[in-house]
Length: 239
Image (cartoon, rainbow, N blue to C red; front, side, top):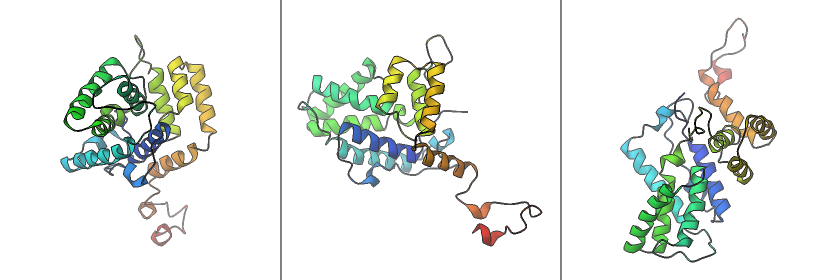
């Protein structure tokens, strides 16, 4: 149980997909790597979200590095130092990917405040970087939504799409999956989607990593076998 947090690998994959969809240069892959802070076998358990001050500082520096790439995203309009339609559309597209759900008025109002403050003090590029950093450091980016349908305990369609995508593909929902979530994902559609996604090659590395962590195969020397059933298995073979 508990809140589902993205693992470092999922963060990397998500950021790279965000940059690709928005048309920004991919740059150095290492820039997209979130600082490793795994404390448990499974790298996305709730407890692994208890970060130290040094880890939090590392995340801030990471977000600043990614924002350098994000600020190079091409736009159809010119981003200025004050919030306008161009800035709103740009930020909404960014936050839609980062939060894996439609962006509401309250979300945009918070981005607007930061954009205007930074734009007034520095320049348009700094304001653009600020909204990237704000999106990447938001709990809505790091944690999967547990939002339910109104009057129900069933997850809403955007939360379902995100959990499907991360469980099977290890990254954010793609454009088709997001469009399906916008329309609504009922139980029949959910089953068909899961079957379809399991046939996608993107599931192979994700499911391999899951079983590797679950069975502790990353450290074979720690494995123990019943000597009666596996008489040839010893420490040398494990190493």
